[in-house]
Image (cartoon, rainbow, N blue to C red; front, side, top):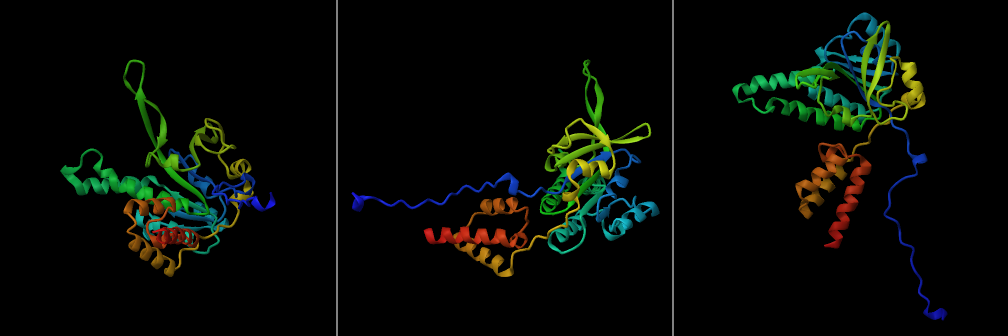
Amino acid sequence: MIGSQKTHKKMSSKLKAKDPAATEPRKPQMVIYGASGVGKTWFSLAFPAVYYIDTEGGASRSHYMERLKSAGGVYLGPEDGANDFETIIGQVKALSTESHTFRTLVIDSITKPFISSIASEGERLGDKNAFGADKKPAVQSMRRLINAVHRLDMNVIFVAHEKSEWGQDAKGDRVEIGKIADTYEKLIYELDLAMHVVKRGPQRLAVVKKSRLVGFPESENFPLNFEEFAARYGRETIEKPSQKVTLAKAEQVAEITRLTSLLKTDSATIEKWLEKANAESFTEFSETQAEKIIEHLNKQLTSK
């Protein structure tokens, strides 16, 4: 009977996945490493509108500066604090939240601040240095830097020195089995691409060591130049203007603080939110992230 028929409301879906076609391709984030003089810096400076953080002062020579200037880039050297992690992290955060015309961030080299931090902590600890304790501040700084980079809508190139990778031969003797990046060992797993730069005769080649990218199969090598890289990755994406993160408003931060205090939200939950947002505090949430958290907290409040 018509009178006894029930009407069913259409349930709204909680599924959040997007159509792949609607997902914007992101800009490349990579580490390149190799011996001195193989062309790492020259390659990096060919990218569009470089914000160049020179931790060693190696790119202050005139031919590098001319190449940087011609591509619309700017320079931050050791005299400006470029070899200090706090300065580097601060600059990356500013690049993600301020309007600017830069397209590419280059940190050359990431080896210098990492090794310097370890040496400084080792000196401070003295006889108390044991079980890699001297590495802890450097690793913490690298994790903070990686989080900041992940918020950045720019091409990102970490330049690193190379060091020997050691293993054992059939006799059990210690032998060199290759070269790896001389920096935080987990960096390559946080980025899209890791390439070892080598010279073979007159050629400079990029050897793909780790990749999440279709155009860069692992173990493949190609000529180290921007044109080749752009053809493989997509020039349009690389040259696209960067978009800044709009930070949470002061009233949003105040509301999150009020609600978490009222609900006695545990620190583990808050840390999870911060980690997901690549943020270090409520003030680093984006407006959208803050809005979602406030909505979530208000639902918790009304359900009590």
